[in-house]
Image 1 (cartoon, rainbow, N blue to C red):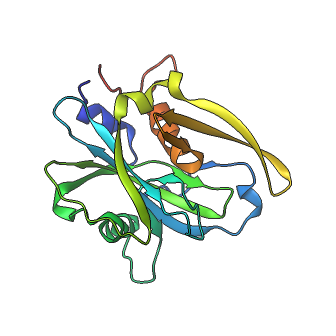
Image 2: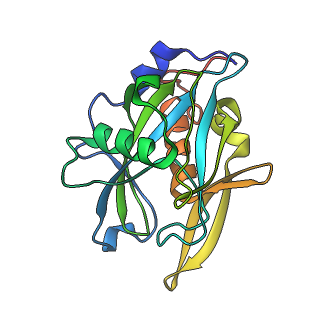
Length: 205
């Protein structure tokens, strides 16, 4: 798979969105905590991949789940990019000089009480990782073309806080990518035109 970077960048927002957002079931009634994550596309020679973390089982938020590196906005953070890069460095030790920010996806509002800015970026190998054992159980990569393929976007339902919630999942081997992480991947796929008859930028196979 070859990645058309110019067309990918053309489909991303150039600034963190002021009004555009994706909202999970139940998010509208919550007070939302600001956060940002890095959507890291690794430029592997054979095919680009996306880097994920598996969170440790004892964490208060999203324990054990597959996530993008990222977290809550801190008082000293200057921007969503600053939050995403800081959290990525703290969680997995990925150096900032290996990361090139491309743009933003719409804000993602979760049913668990967060409003997340996804920062889409390229990661240039080689790089070294130093996962924080308190937060990160594992770091792994999944091919980008697998994640963007609508065939791999499964819809699920669950009862949460007394209501039926719907969410996307993208199972890959032993990994169950779901919830907000899968929703942000779906958001990128839609902006690339992979779910519409008229493409708005494309990942060329």
